Each structure stands twice: as C-alpha cells, then as structure tokens.
Length: 224
Image (cartoon, rainbow, N blue to C red; front, side):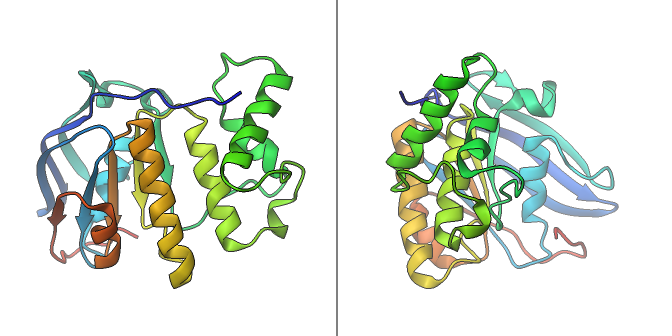
C-alpha cells in the first residue's frame, strides 16, 4: 500500500516582495508547473531561504513580505502553516532521534489514515521503494548520510504535500551521493506531479533541476 502525493496543476507566485527594513531582498513572479523545478540562486546571506520561509508560513517577523502564493487556485498564505502542506527538505535530514526509521515516516502520514497497521505498511512500502527495505525498526543514528536523506524524502512524500520546498538539501552530501539524491528527488517530484522550489548556491543543483533559474544578489541581510 503506497500513499502517493496528489498531483497539482502547479504553483503560482505573484508579485512576491520580501524586505528586511529598507532592503528589498527579493521580487519574484513565476509559475512553476507540476513536476517542474524553479531554482532560486544566490550566495549565502542573500536572502534566498526567506522565500521558502514565506511560502511555508514560518517567516521571521523581522522580515516584511507580500504577494500571492497559490496551488490549484488555493491561496496558501490564507492558510495556517500546517494546512499549506508544503513538503520541506533542509540541509540536515532532521529525523526524530527518539523514533525508529519507520516511526519517523509514519509520523508524517495524514491523520485520515487512522489504522496503525496501514500506517506501518505505508512506511514499510515507501522504504522499500527507496531501496531501504527492512529498515523500519532501525535507529536513525545507525544510518549513513545518504540513507538519512532518503528517509527524509520518504517522510515528506507520505505527508501528501502540495509542493516541495528544497533548502539546499544536497549540500552536506559527498559528490557521489549528491548526484544520486538530485536524481531521486527530482524524479519523485516529476512522478508525483509536484511543483518544486529549490534554493541553492550550487550551479550543479540548478543544472540537475533543469528548470528556470531566478538569481538574487547579496544583500545586507542574512538568511541563515
């Protein structure tokens, strides 16, 4: 039993403006079709990650932001963060250390799947699909970096996201694993019909994503 994300008609970003005090960090209008990737590039400190924070609903109050973010004509900015269903991958996998690998994934399965056996089966199935069959009972601390990245991706996918937000998720992997994870993430997004926003400073990430690139310059602010 697999729990697949529901394909969307794409993401629309209209008249986005993000400021910090008197400094405009970003202005952006773009459409991101289902299964495609918009890459936002800029050096560390340029403010690129603030876009993901704005879309996800966790922008620091120090920033001022406006614009429209919609998926299938639903304005995400009118929804509480948890209702926006923005699947996010960060530089670190952020797996819960007190939970098994399977429990980490099951935690993200929507509440309408109430049966515990079904939740465990969904977790086991997506682990097998990620090349991690039999890993459900493993402690996350025993996994390699590449295995943790796959578990983090699996956890996002079972949450039924409307879109994927990628905050330099490949940057801490070695070169070989980075190439493998790029292929895996972008293929899964295409298969699931999910629009993707990737922020990165790595040209190879943008090349692998294959979509349009929005470049921003260094501003007098830090995006962490």
